[in-house]
Image (cartoon, helix red, strand yellow):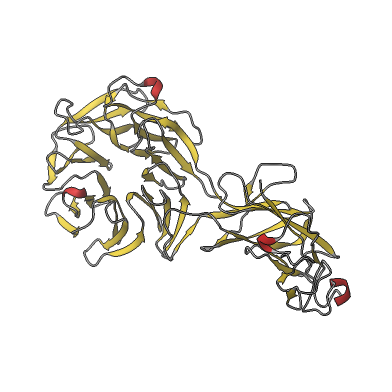
Length: 490
């Protein structure tokens, strides 16, 4: 663990004499007998140097160099060479107070910059002090102009390693500005996602109700059947990490949708004629499984109060049928590989994937298919609100939107290889399977993107139910390394 000690004198000009500052006037101060430091009158930024010529602020300061940061009732500001800043406002302390700053380059998990040990630990202030914490993490892909990390200032009580985020977190590309009323250890870091399921074989599809999160995966190694096509539908109670299988082993389950009584899923197919494809459902209470339709290669499913809608990647059709089963009716043909669906009250929307590179809509009652966007780069995840259709391109890494009624598309975010999308209110969530391997929140009103998590093991689908957190599935780089994660910001 590498530590650097900052102990720099910052005198409020009207409160401390030049002699007490160790310098010859209020604009030149030093705490080590040298007057080569510089600072502004009235408690501005202070940067000094030690007697041997080494820096006494920033990363150049060495442990044991003996500098200190002194402040009185008028307040003061200290800024280190690495950008770390303490701004003590007037009235925060009632008497002369010495603050020490020790930099620790190895911070806890989730840190995106160094930790600073502020002393005397436990000292409290009458008014909150403002801290600027530099972000130093190296990302694999450069952030866009309107993109920042979802970083907070984390601190812990004296003697505890239980770090918690502070409320204020004004984030820029380079730093987090936060506030505290107590000295302790502090660092800039990310809210870590909570695993709800781990060591699964390539989990993908997600669905949720008020009590459970549902997901499809190939299962864990201890339930492997020996058939690589087999998988399961799981449910895990929200706030826990104990998933349970709802069905026996089933061929290649994927594409979930849930209503009040059942979980619906696409089963089998996988371009293998030996494994018939089907649309199935399981009763939430009895766990009874029903096959509703056996057709083509079902790759997606969604529904409403009266009907189901599903995509056939083999016949390249979109179908509809009653919730309780019946004869499927073609809503749209030449639909490409419709693995991602979205809906509003009147229409169904989908992406055709690499098969067509188009984005479509069709009325749920049937009729002419409308192409919303053409010549896309392997469009994948899709979402819709009252005005726009949003989609993610795996090929060129763009997240776009276009008016439902037709019109020019607009870039929302530029990533590397975008996959899943979910919309909640004015926030669009997305996953990027390459580059920073991130899960992102795009504020559609401010046009600002926040990386909620990065370095994820291949994030696929994302889900953002109303009134809940954000959930996503990580495929994992290797078999049985997949995860289902939950994210809750303060």
